[in-house]
Length: 108
Image (cartoon, rainbow, N blue to C red; front, side, top):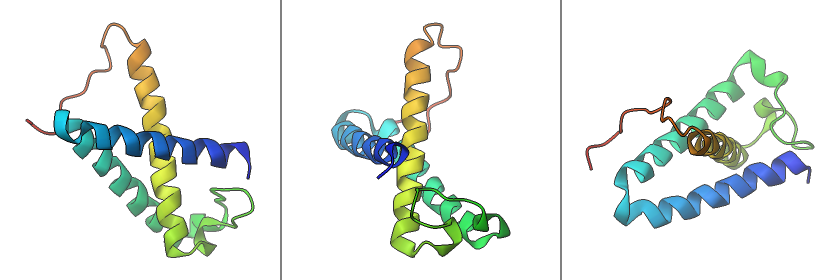
């Protein structure tokens, strides 16, 4: 398995654990991450149905996005959206001025 695949799956594990830890203490974080996963999966299915999918290979050796089965598309959507969430968390951590602050998704 290539490094990118392992990194994206590792990001998924990290985000799942973070959401489980945050369910009681930070509902906004949990809801935001769940929404991110939902959008990632939905866009993976949409991209898989588009003409562009014949060119997209999410994981080496897995074939193109249009050829992946449903569970593989779900896993790809979850893993890739988790990877970008980790990048966003890193950016947020180094932005000491809070200049990239976004409004909360929930009031909880």
